[in-house]
Length: 260
Image (cartoon, rainbow, N blue to C red; front, side, top):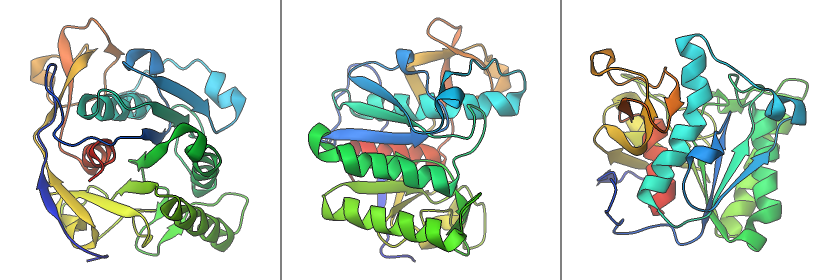
């Protein structure tokens, strides 16, 4: 166990319900890509990666690309469903809109939060990605020494903690073993697990049991027979609601939204 273990039952919100406890400040979500026009309420999209990457128009064709392309939008939707009022800052930080968030880009996103948290009352950061090697607790660090990038991330997370900003990160969807993702392995990061994926529970700070998430707003071209996949185009008027399983990505978004 990394620090402590708390098992919580989260009732995901649907339209018309109000969370019992919500994060009273703004929430920053770090991910690869966002379609911010699909998210209700106060939303600000911020380009952390290159302007070229942020402005590139992508039309995913493979299921794997759709899954990555949609991930940030679904995380923002989950946060919004669990916290209808919080201002959301969507930090687009991927190498591309269907790529990854490296440790270098994660550090840049966290530094943006440090610079903007006080002015915008940001109280939580949600990161439902893996940016390195959790077993070694080292980041992916292209072009920069791994130790330099890691020390930068550790320092900025510590600064956020001192500012009263909680950083939540997904522990990882490991079916067995005793594993964890990066940066969830960092002591000052709140590592969030899911009881469905028990392989990272021992190293999680917070473990949430939640039902399958069914979006109250986002729609998909998927059919019922195609199951719980986000590997299809997302719309606002498709035939079926977007549905995703109770992964550590989902539980991390819930934790940040509800300030657990």
